[in-house]
Image (tube, rainbow, N blue to C red):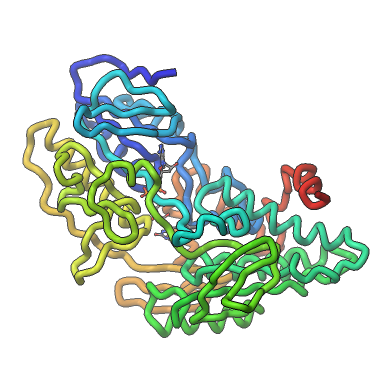
Length: 431
Ligand SMILES: Cc1cc2nc3c(=O)[nH]c(=O)nc-3n(C[C@H](O)[C@H](O)[C@H](O)COP(=O)(O)OP(=O)(O)OC[C@H]3O[C@@H](n4cnc5c(N)ncnc54)[C@H](O)[C@@H]3O)c2cc1C
């Protein structure tokens, strides 16, 4: 069924993607004399930095996501549409959503469609090494992790299949590090007392990374501290290690096989297909090389922002794919479009304000590199917790998450240890 847009003389601004970049842009346009159509293939904005907590049962999906329709309920110039944008004709300014063309050309189009996993040309690894990008991914990982323990408890010889309790993270960036610490802690702190026939703390968590240090976006001393803390949590860190294959047996490093039924891909990303389809010039990661105002070369009314855009920083590099970059770019392009619509002066050229970098490793330990402060430990954890609570997409998320964290920190009990599709997972285990 085609999407119908409310008819009026006002210009039509289509925003594809209701993540950090898209929602910040739509919010900026809240007083603009325009019709804004926000299209997303999910009905919610998800706070990706806490996905790993859903995957490891500390939080539930509704704690870190908010429905887009609810978020913009008071913004009368905005229509929210659930659908996947499959085609864009930037010459005719037409877009196709879920197979049907929107009947009216857009005046401005903003793509804030983020990224997906990249297996670096080895898409055949995907079935054996799921990644973590969406709520659906987080639920899949959570089921896989919990089912590994459930399966051991049911075995005649619970310890006969160490590959079930071997968890391998391919990629030692923030997601790999956070997930590794959280899986280890899930077993050691919460599951340890819940099983009777084997010891959940006998699990093995391994991080593999091709570089010579973890979380390479942080200064080297914080990478070292993160590694030491992970090792304290029982995580094995293997650096300068290139994965050559992932299959149903596990992970291959050349001729060496690490047997594992739980391999998770935390290594690379590339833009979603709709961005690739534009055929515009890209960097080597597939991100669009946008103009200084985020427009796509040759198409002044088409913008790309957030993880899908390649934008230079002041040191000759590229701005990283993080939430604060996407949000600042969204706000900037929002102001720019409003100035065009209202024929007022354009904002000054975009300058990124870097507020710093944070990563958490298990309970009570974080690394922070922010505005001259470099810290690791409990103080950094408090900063991490405060900032994450503050940036959750709605006040319901903030209150709910705060209370669940408090309960979890005090009692060790987790809010999300439910396997919704247990019967389907048991069938898979038996087949
Ligand atoms: C596990 C994880 C942890 C992270 N941790 C941190 C962190 O601690 N700090 C930090 O700053 N950043 C973190 N990031 C990165 C941060 O989440 C991203 O940089 C940010 O989300 C990028 O915003 P965006 O608007 O470009 O894309 P996104 O927020 O990813 O939003 C893209 C939206 O586009 C929609 N979409 C995609 N294609 C289509 C289509 N064809 N049609 C319709 N809709 C479409 C998607 O459904 C999605 O809602 C993390 C990311 C992940 C995955």
